[in-house]
Length: 169
Picture 1 (cartoon, rainbow, N blue to C red):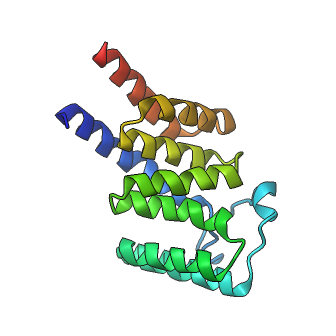
Picture 2 (cartoon, rainbow, N blue to C red):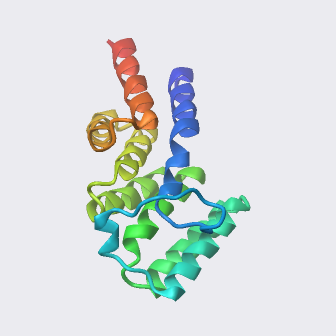
């Protein structure tokens, strides 16, 4: 793998991974106010599912990303109907653990469940870049920008892709 590609990938990771946190509620007393999309409201969470997701976030915040993956996979099997929340988080945890094909699969599921969520499209674009599938990443990043024109992450990723295309020509 060329030095340019590694540099591109890691600079993209630094910009894009913070996106994942927008899907799951944190402690309301410490978190900024956020809104829930109408799409996400179609997937209500039981108390058990919410507790399992919060546990996964705690594990991830502690730096145990493999443990967070296991907790999220457990949540999917024990709490049906949590995919809209879990696939997005799972995709990011797979990215953090270097499991790129799994990240792409999970984020594709997240995009299917929440097609109007800009962060899912941006994270899928990142995963596709990391997988080397630039031709598939570009439309995802453009869709993320269509949904959220202020998404600095999607914009930076798309600019990096365009620079990469220009360098390869």
